[in-house]
Length: 291
Image 1 (cartoon, one colour):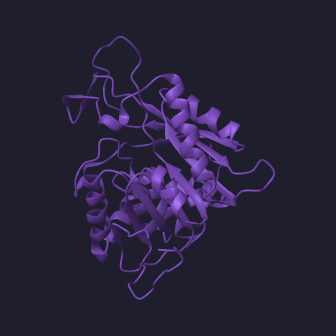
Image 2 (image 1 turned 120 degrees about the vertical axis):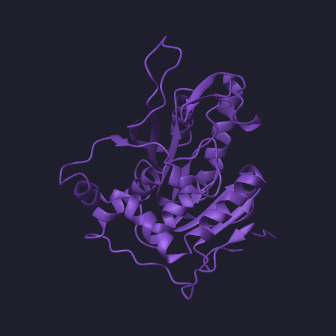
């Protein structure tokens, strides 16, 4: 029997502490959308800059690269497990850089997914290039794919157009990197900004949809989902990061913090006209998950 590490009072946020390779096969449930931020395999003893300080790029043992064959095997295995948890009309978003994104794309194609877009996230505040030997790294990529080549997927086209000043939104998104106010409960080395995850979830789900994140980290996916009225299951192997996730979710139980976070994310404010979202009160309980 699966016992959640943490579950919110309204049951719209559930977190499992363990390895997604072990936990995903243990339950039968299908999600509307999956977001995955898997290891990029770039912990190579290099250096970067954060908050004006030189830091190591090493994230942990989980991010150390292997041979190309091992990386391909890793990606194909977890994507295959996620495919079994996706609804027939569901979509998956996977982030990466050149270190892993080509392997991810090949795995998706081999497993029968149809790649819809490769979104380029152009960071408006990237860290500087301290070596001065190449162009500054300022982008990451997010592959968006649907489960079946023939089954139509869900896309809130009009909403995305509205968020882009009533012009078709392109596959280049200019959004800032993580902000200090998003780290009040602790730091995760690869934490994504709420603005990015909010747009992804708004684009491909409706209210009350279920979102899965097999590499939850500090659960930015879950916080974004709950801020806009979606439900979330995250799986995180590291207990320290799972604890940060719990603290972040408990933080937005405070109505003032909840409102403050929503006000900081421009897409939420713009989407209110087309998709009103209310604060989820504790009396509204979701019990769809089988545990």
